[in-house]
Image (cartoon, rainbow, N blue to C red; front, side, top):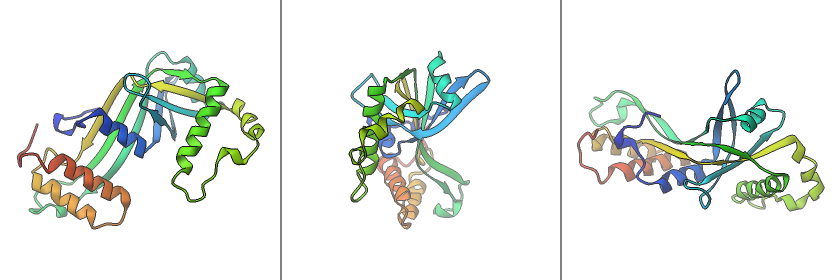
Length: 215
């Protein structure tokens, strides 16, 4: 991923926070006839491994499952945070070209397949995480355990230990500070939570920097 020095996240924790807030990912693995990609949720366990561990599952019938089991090269997990098109009309001087502000994290690592017991436990963690914000949310305990275990042979659980972590928070840091902050102000006028989240990130990365164009 091409990342100018000004676009680098300040800490690993800021990248981990993005993964936690936006766990819907794209998993990419080299296959026999080219790349295989699957969209799926991946949960981060920060406590395990040097850069954390990602946990997920996919259908056993998916060719990607066989590729994961046989992969020698690292697998890539891609996470996207908030993003937006930026029109030149948002800049005070209307004198900058249009662009995108966006955030992304790439995680590279080798995959280990889970046992059935590990898969069942991780499914419980996934459901609890996703149901937590839902009023009167559902839990696995509401159905017989047999309804879970009979489905386990149809899916493959895995863990990806992150060996390389890359982030790109392109938030106007290479533009005049007043322009980046003007974009944040425009995004605050909307009602979409992700754009307000993006506005907060823009201010976080631009408010305290000199009003000059960094490298």
